Length: 172
Image 1 (spheres, rainbow, N blue to C red):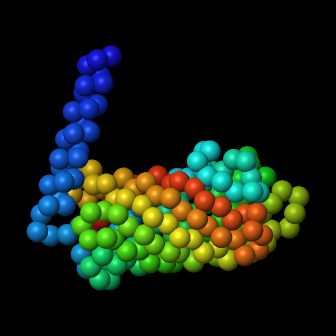
Image 2: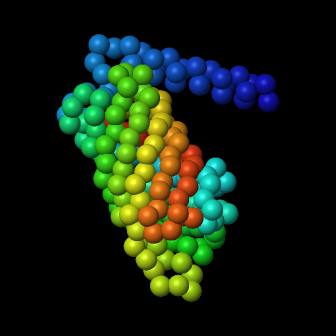
């Protein structure tokens, strides 16, 4: 057990040294002209909404850095609430800002949502979202991205909520 634990610590140290090396280079990972693709998941007890007890969300993202540290982002996500009692499919666009080369970012997204609640006709919603996170570089292009978010529902404020998302990103 001690060997496994020490191996995990060594691996984590190697990853952080690689990430710091990249961030200390003269170039920036968030420079104009780069593209980004990512995927994340949310829920599993790390979010809160008045309308549901349990949520699982899967999200796909794509982006383009149109200026240094500024990214246009497109998102598509699927949200399953309370074991299928409510299912939502969202599509949206927004912007993300990276605070220089440290990897901390914040953003806003405007999403169109189509929700289907069991036994009830589906409804459409506008859900703006604000979020903040950290892009931790595992390699020159790959990141792990934990982020916190708040999503507001204009159809029913019970479906507004906040939570934690964990994702992976790839910059090229």
